[in-house]
Length: 147
Length: 147
DNA sequence: ATAATTTATTTAGAATTCAAGATAATTTAA
DNA sequence: TTAAATTATCTTGAATTCTAAATAAATTAT
Image 1 (spheres, chains in turn purple, cyan, brown, blue):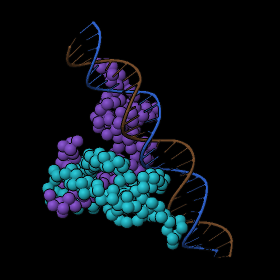
Image 2 (image 1 turned 90 degrees about the horizontal axis):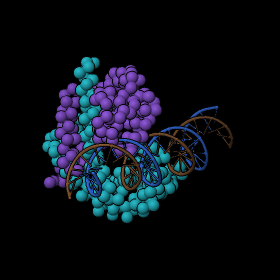
Image 3 (image 1 turned 120 degrees about the vertical axis):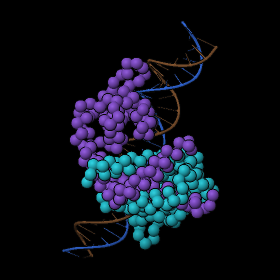
Image 4 (image 1 turned 90 degrees about the vertical axis):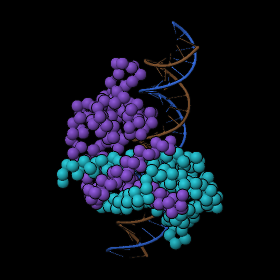
């Protein structure tokens, strides 16, 4: 393993971090204008696009500890954007389910949200996007080899 | 702007987020073994590689609010890894400066740290790394156009 | 030179997250 | 069947981050 190779990997890590944080900071500012924080918005997107979710699963999908899920779901429930629904088959399990108000919220906000994200990516050509998607997907998936 | 283009951008955002978070989670586990948290480690790396920094600048470079810088620098100062040095030319400014202990710490830890990060990137070829670096650099730099 | 504005750091308090343990339900194994 | 182990959620307390305001110094404009 050459030291040049190591340097290239370090550089990749730095560039990946900077790009993600820079994009994410812009996306987070967007989300704030909807009156939610990024975690809350992630939960709403998940429920809207993937349907009801056991609380447990939410943690896995948006990378959040179990205690934090309770907190976020409490807040969204207070805002009327989702409700807890007991699982009839397994009484340990609680589903988070989007409400009508929650559905309207996402439907109001999401089309413009997507366009704004497209704007943030507008410096890249379609081919560049395609190739980054392919390579980063590979990189992301490989990370479970190192747990 | 076609809806296919928007979908591609959304996909890029998701893949970028997942890849970053997955890699970062592995890197953070590494850093924990050194007895620092990721923010503290980032400050130490910055001081080691880029020399003394006005507190203000640290915030810009590792994306941290001014109040948080005070907190992190306090902790590193308590651990003896850096010290505050007054700027003689501008008495508003305080520099963070790495101590001998801090220098030894980084020198002990960094070579292996870099190798481990290289390992985390080992699923990608040199060419793939090169092309992601180029494209993500462009993406990252373009984000200031949207502030 | 003085007042107003800007810049750097710190303080204070709130929000968010995590880790560890508590509780409750289910499953497994003796 | 009962005990032990596992799984899901919630509670608690600590750690980390943010925002906004306070303080202090420097700069700009009158």
